[in-house]
Structure formats: C-alpha cells, structure tokens
Amino acid sequence: MVRALARRDITQPFPVQQLVVRDALAGHDLLVQSPTGSGKTLAFGIPLVELVEPGRLSALVLAPTRELASQIVDELESVAKTCQLRIAAVYGGVGFGPQSKAARNADIVVATPGRLEDLISRGVVSLEHVQVLVLDEADRMLDMGFKPAVDRIVAQTPKQRQTLFFSATLQGATGKLAAAYTRDARHHTQAAPKQAKADIEHHFFHFETQSDKFDRLVEQLRDDADGRTLVFVRTKRGADRLVKRLLSRGIEAAAMHGDKNQRQRERALARFEAGDINALVATDVAARGIDVADITHVVNFDAPGDRESYVHRVGRTGRAGQSGTGISFVLADQADEVRRMAGSLGLSREFDQHHKGGGSRNGSTHQGQRSRRRRRPRVAG
Image 1 (cartoon, rainbow, N blue to C red):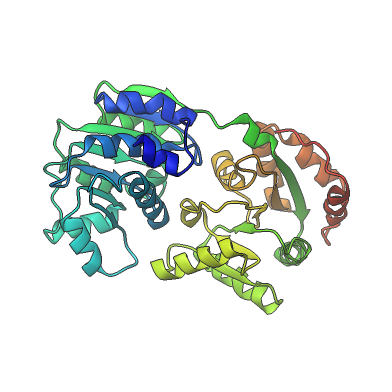
Image 2 (image 1 turned 90 degrees about the vertical axis):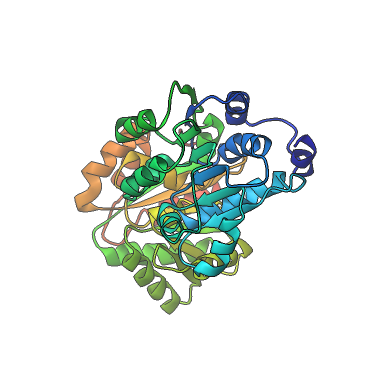
C-alpha cells in the first residue's frame, strides 16, 4: 500500500485520512463529516483494499452520481493493483452487459443506487457477504431522492457489517440516516481548509433581466478565454438552452446533466479538461462528480438556492493552492435571499460592493471586474 501511494507521490496522509484510516482498519463504524476535495476517497479506499480478501463481493460503496462512482473506482484501482482485487463500477447511462459481467465477479462494487437495484433484481449481484458498506456523499443521495433505494439496499446487507458513512453534513435528515445505519460509530469532522477559502475572490453582479445576465456571461467568457469556467444553472433544460445560446455567439461550451448518457458526460469533461471548450454548463447534481484541476472561474448563472449549494459550487475553484474567482448573477427579486446567504458566509461586503456600485440594467458592474484584473484586491473569506 505504501509503495502504491508513493507511486502517486503521496507520502503523507491528508487530515481526513489521518483521522479515519486507523479506526476503519480496526473495524469501527464511522460517521465522517468531510467536504468534497478533502481526500476522503482514500480515507475509506485504503482500509477497503487492506481489509477485503479476493473471492467474493465483500465491500460495497454507494455514491450519488456516475461521475463520482467512476472516480472512486479509479482511486481504488490506483492502490489495489498488486492485490488481485476485482473492482466494478455500476451506474446508469451505459449498457447492462459489461457491468453485469464485471459486478458478477467483483470483490468490491462501487454503485449508484438505481443501477445496483436493477442488477440485484436480475440476480447478478448478491449483498449477503458484504463485510464493509461505504456511503459516500450521503447528504447528496438524500437530496436526489435515493433514500428509499438506499434503505432497500442496506436491508440486504448483513447486520454484522462495518459501515463507513461520509457526508458534508451530519445534521437533520442525514444525521438520522447515519444513526440508523451505524452502530456505536466513531465521529470524525474534517473542516474545509481555511487556505482554500482565502484563495477565492467572490463577486455578486446584479441584473434586471435574464438577457442582461446572458450578455454579461458572454463578456466574461470572452475576457477569460484562456481559463476554465464552470457555469451553474438550476435545470437540465436550462443547461441545454444556455449552451445553445453560447454556441450561437461563437463560444464553445458543453452541458453536463442527468439526461446525458455516460459517454456524453465523459466527452464533455474530457473537452473541458483539455481546454477545447470555454465553459462547462452544469446542474448541481451533475457537478457533484466533477473533479477537474485548475478551474479558474465558477459562475452561478442561476443563483444558488442555499448556503451549502454556494459553498459546493464555488469550492470547485481555488483548489490546491491556486487562486480562483466565484461570480454570482443576481436578479432583483433574488437580492434579499442571496444577500442573507452571502452574509452567513461573511461576504456581505462583497455583495454590497457590487450592489452599490451600479447593479444596473446593463450590468455596469463589469467595470469593477476589469479593474480587478489590473490589481487583485484582497477579498475576505
């Protein structure tokens, strides 16, 4: 294991790994509150590879999206190459054939709930020998309406299993679910790194119409054509519509949402990562599995609905010591709600700065953005 990690230039554990790995190896149930990008996949991946013996399906990882499931498999395979463990990815958007064959012979299955239930009903997968159950991004599975499916899946695993429960929050409904699935669990909390927050500049632009927002987005993408911009919208239809409008203005863009099949999603991600497109337009759910380095800008074309969504969206930039910029477009009827959210994050000054600076019909706050490029001010939080 140490050699496998060293091949990836990992010689020291991330904080969440330091908290979790020892207890997981000791067989304890765990409740882990940890943000995206903290290294949590290897926090449960290292114990899985160490604990599972080849021969039958002994470990199950549940994830909310296809992208996240695929990323988890890649992480596990990177440290399991010398262990003869068979790891299968199970998710929708692709044919049953190859996945059925892989899952039938797997020691570890990483799955989204819907497709896993399909394979269980077809008799391809049995969970009767699962020793370790991992629920990754459990809060997002609840948000996506997967609780009934997850309940049915968990009920088919042995009661004497080890459960590792990972979530960005352990409050409310997520906390109740965690308590129901675990026994005498040890709690670990890994806060988001303060450094990551300090590397992000936050801007709120105020507009009267959707058309003004679109014109400003076009200017933003043209001004920052050499960067990678992730654009968030609320709906799948809105993502497709926005991409179509951007293409009509000569701006290369692609959409990422749940109606895209796996091949389309992987192609969009590959083009975005390679710099072949100026923008990737995504919904919150689809973006949960996006892990692309060097995203320079996140644009909330549709304002986020709550504090958690804002943190999740903007947290896609400013990673690994890089600087980033989070931009939110705010319509007049959203201003009060977004201001409250900004205030809860310590961003009232940033919100008010642009609001007072001319939240006009033509989006004149653009001048403030241009001045930022000449001299980067220090922005709190």
